Length: 461
Image 1: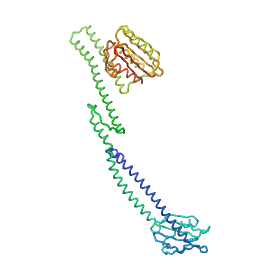
Image 2 (image 1 turned 180 degrees about the horizontal axis):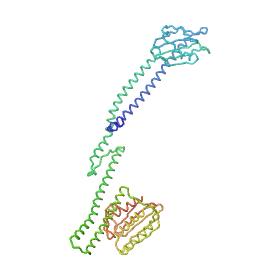
Image 3 (image 1 turned 120 degrees about the vertical axis):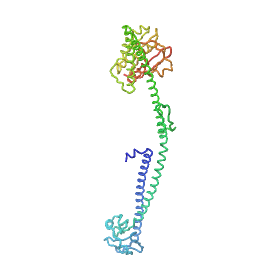
Image 4 (image 1 turned 45 degrees about the vertical axis):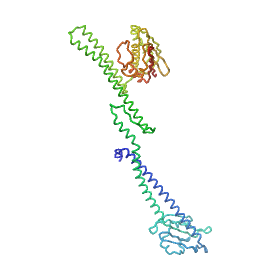
């Protein structure tokens, strides 16, 4: 049954659940009404019996200790109503209606009443279910007789049956209306979802700019539509960046490959000369190194995108790494006429030493690329309690404000590279941000054209 329900459209499932819930409510309501009505009808019947017993008791005369029925007329209708008087010995006293002889005495109730306690119960008498009251009659402190009064429960059963039939009929109509109304309400409720589904199905990979029109309300459907549009925004942005990344990567790889192909074609078209061959091989070696560097960088970025960038975490002295890298760049700074200033405060953090070296090298190499002769590059480390801060600042050309939002995008270049140890591919800052993110830190770049650029990296300890 559950499998069949799951295969139904959701509007039918909602209607079935709604109708089932209503059916349960109707059954509980019908049961409560029946039980409550039965109780009140029975209570009313008991009150009638008690009133009749009281009237009969008032008409009893005591003559020499013997009870006798007075002049009050007593009506006994076989199968509907009976009244009898029994003395303290259990003997039936004279009754003006001989038809009472056809009605058997309620012995259990009689015995209880003879013991001094009233008793009321249901009995099956002559194919009729009757309510029988046995009421003791006391004169002074002595029990002298018992009055038994019985009334048929036919009226109770008739009222209950009519009530049940009415409830069942009304419930069936209500259930039918609930199914029809439930389908109508489900259609109206699900219409926005159905419309959004149709629009979403029309949105293809080549047309990610389209958006669904969510309801203006702030309910679940409105939030669903806005969330879906936000997801489409992210997908479109990711697809656009993927296309740009693929195009840029193809361009970066095509340049060294084209140069290698050209060098090989020229070399193969000429006679062999050792010096020329050596020059060609050296050029090819440089291009292969660049290709290898770009490929490794692309692999790292791809692993970062899929969350597979592994870190070998250990205690690392960030200040010590800064001094080590400054020593390696000192010859380049001297030959380029750039002043390299270092203020390295020892500060230990939990990180991957190789990745942190790659981060610092990328930032320092980027600073040297954009700094001209006679200007300075400053490297600093700071201990900020729970965090360590690394700063790389140059006095280069700076970055225009319109480039700053895109500076971490892959293959993005802002400005002209003046000089470098190796030709860049526009991936240094992307790799740097990837490493910082992997260490749960943050990186910030502030720059002003003509005044230089400052990169601040904060890493947790």
